[in-house]
Length: 196
Image 1 (cartoon, rainbow, N blue to C red):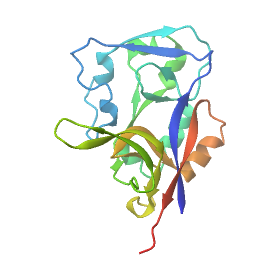
Image 2: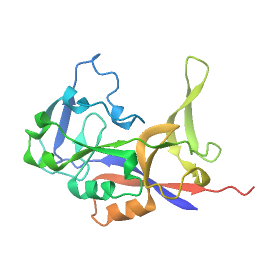
Image 3: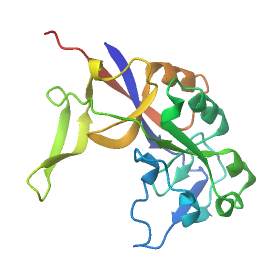
């Protein structure tokens, strides 16, 4: 049995927070960073940026749009992960970096690799209906993965069935943990193999 970890935001009260604004209707998908296709050129320039009071720059930068923005020390680990070709680490645009010099070193993570691997029978999931008669996973209370569906050389990916948070290998989580990172916590995810 392998173990994976999902990354969940947990910012301190004093964290520097990047506020991201955009004109409603002009940007169709604010999370295009995490679609399988390359992020459109100039995508991050389409937004305007301000900050709210806070002086602590955490390893995951607090923001109000749901992006995964990482500090230089974690960016280095991400850039060296075994499937680094499946991620993008994008510079924040100049109109964001003008808010504080430290922002020049942060990168916005886009995870392009999706793997369909949730063990629906073993996981505790909340399903919702969609108009065409199908269903989708609206919430995950306990996630169990199908180990055989995940190549062993993958360090970071998203779940096709619930592509909301990045999932990382125990190897990459251990490398992160060496730094006692701030701004997020790990949630353990089991990957199991069923006996035939």
